[in-house]
Amino acid sequence: MKKYCIDLTVCAVERVNERHVLLRLTAEETLPPMLPGQFAEVRVDGSSTTFLRRPISIHFVDEESNELWLLVAMVGDGTRRLAELKVGEKLNCVLPLGRGFSLPSSAKQRFLLVGGGVGVAPLLLLAKEICRMGGEATFLLGARTESDLLELELYNRYGRVCVTTEDGTAGVRGMVTDHPVLSEPFDRMSVCGPLPMMKAVAAVARQKGTPCEVSLENMMACGVGACLCCVEKTTKGNICVCTDGPVFNTENIWLT
Image (cartoon, rainbow, N blue to C red):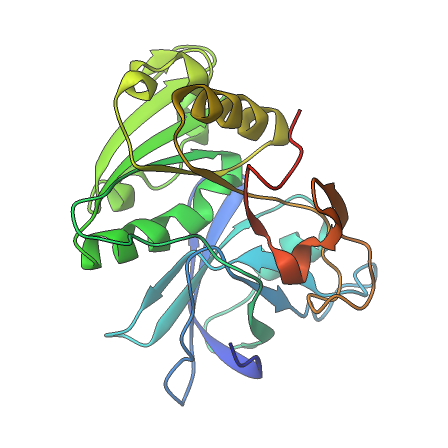
């Protein structure tokens, strides 16, 4: 897909919880096509310690309002600066980058979308596209505690939402692999989140014989395969996550 370097205008900065904000961005021109699982490289202005762009998953695209949504976890000076953006300010982005998730090959396919932490971000657009193509999406979202769960009302618009929390404050107590929904039949699993969680879900998928894709969260400084800081070892050799991924079929990547 063609890549664009564009200045987007901030429409809204919405605080999701203490550690996450939702950036809603728009452009004068129609936004370019974007696929679930792709990402943007975002330039951070006004930070004395942030020199490289930050890779952020494409959370959602609203064609009617011509908006791109980015879900930002405030983990350092750069992302905290993004959370301080004001309505009307510009945010320079290079997008869409990377290879996204597979979409239904036929109607009525059942997808289980598993996310943990800010890894839930790309699953919203994925579910929207699955539904648009006649498929069915079920979410399995994990968090440490209830207050860490993100935007459940939005996910409920596109599929059934199943929840686990480590402390039992919401949904099933434990990890995502403790939820009984994993015993149901699905045509495909799509996973994004902490590496141990992705490994555990991939192991369940292998045992069940269900095709499974994971979105890796390696540091991706350039987004175009030039800096080589995101290299990952796979069963087919070393690859750049930013260009060959970030989404990979677990048959092709070593997750043990």
